[in-house]
Image (cartoon, rainbow, N blue to C red; front, side, top):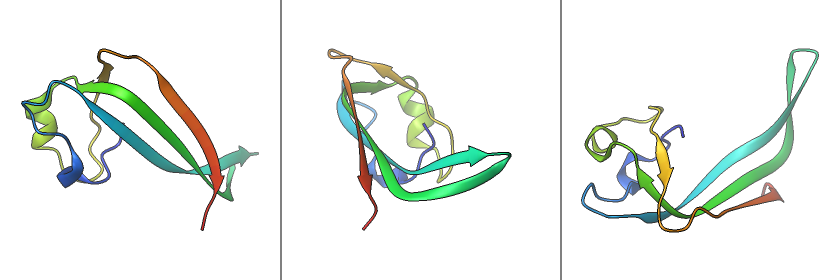
Length: 82
C-alpha cells in the first residue's frame, strides 16, 4: 500500500486495525491513463502492519506492507467522485 496519511496509521503496538484505502479509478488505453471520475474504496476489515516500526517512520508516498490479521476479508466498492 502507498502511504497517503502517515498520521492515520494505527500505533505500532496495535495488534490489528481496520483500514480504508481510497484511490482514483483510472483505465489505461494505448498507454494513456484516463481518469474515470470515480474512486475505488477497499475496506480491509482486519489487517496488521507487516513491519510496524518501519511503518511508523514512513513518510507520505512510502510503500508499506499489510498482512491479513484475524479476518482476511476485504470489501471493494466503486463510487463516483464528489
